[in-house]
Image 1 (tube, helix red, strand yellow):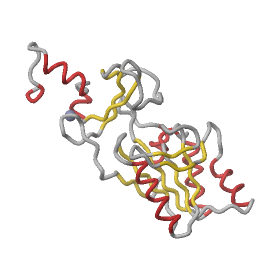
Image 2: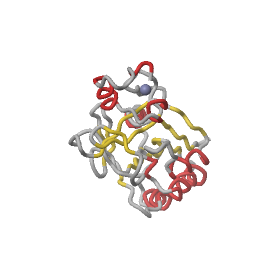
Image 3: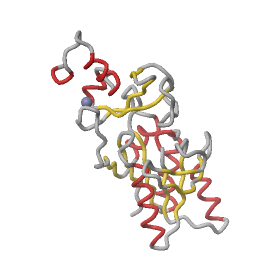
Image 4: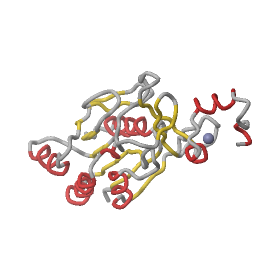
Length: 216
Ligand SMILES: [Zn+2]
């Protein structure tokens, strides 16, 4: 039976690397995939991983009907033995419904990869819809680590290294940002709740007025 599978995790947990691995394994077996992405760090129409791998993908714009796109692709003689949707947290809930329809009506496996929650620890609408509709949700086992060494489960947005909790849900930022621009850092829940990033932990450790991090 074809499946809609949601591979979820924090930023930096290897989602895109796994997406590229799945793509590699299937194309090595002669299968052809349709790859969707949105706002990848490598730019429009790319699926990339932090390990440096990259492949071409279809950039999903607002309002694009993914089911209709697949139907048109197939009706023109194109192949799609499976679908990969990376950065699926940025898809609209309707687009997740369209992916479920691809599974049910076209009998095609869909592998969606995304971050579950935003920098305020709220579900992205696309991820929420995936949790609601997926046949399986797989939490990725390559664990990202907080600066303290604990398992990182939460995404923090930072400005100048300091965690912020206000702002739009989607602001694309990454490495290659100058220090006062928006970036992201993965943290354990404890340090996300305390808004303690690596930079603020270092600053606190240097200040005699603040308790050592290990007992904070
Ligand atoms: Zn921590």
